[in-house]
Image 1: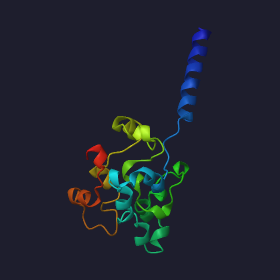
Image 2 (image 1 turned 90 degrees about the vertical axis):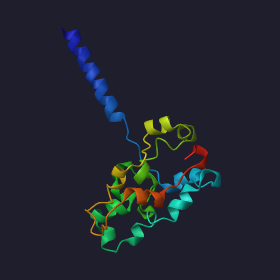
Image 3 (image 1 turned 135 degrees about the horizontal axis):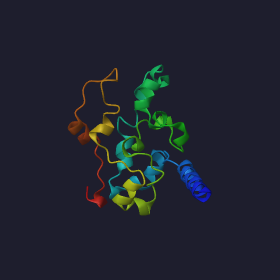
Image 4 (image 1 turned 60 degrees about the vertical axis):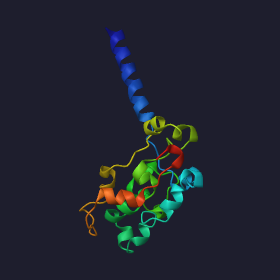
Length: 164
């Protein structure tokens, strides 16, 4: 009977320690994404993002808004996430790649990125209307409605090598 209790206790201890050691993916910032996603043959996604309103979202805030977490949670990826998960992303990046695609530390490597399945398993998010509506909603004092189909056309940044 004691052996069963000890075995159970050891098993539970191992399970808990495994869960505690498991780290969630962290936010690496758009400059890390730029390394691969700014090549012409890949569609220059970084360049497209850098020229977008998302990239300059923090600059669009008034000084008092830039200090207000209710505003910065949607105008800065770095300020919207658990600060323990921030690696090299900065607030000045505004709404960066990882707001829409998830924290990149797990899927940033070339071998992982070559496989959609592996990328998704390592934290890549494929943006949906639900992802966008975390910020584009009535909670914003500047909300003027949101049409997902139209918005997606404005921000789309296909990768010609991936066939999309």
